Image (cartoon, rainbow, N blue to C red):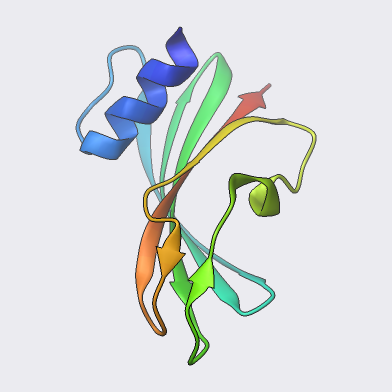
Length: 99
């Protein structure tokens, strides 16, 4: 499955055959989490995104993929670390349909 392959490759951080890698700079807030877009992998019909998620609170938070399903174009999500300590960060891998 190309979506699983894309998420695995993004996790490893290397180039992905058939995808163009773009640097990105975008920030969003989701409750007490800060999300920073770091890289985008694009090819016809599919886009992979690597986000850094930071816990901005002084309490531990448990993350779930469902809290990041914010748009109907998202087809898959993976969170590197589910339990996020105060002020710690982790990676979020997002795959969406792309025109």
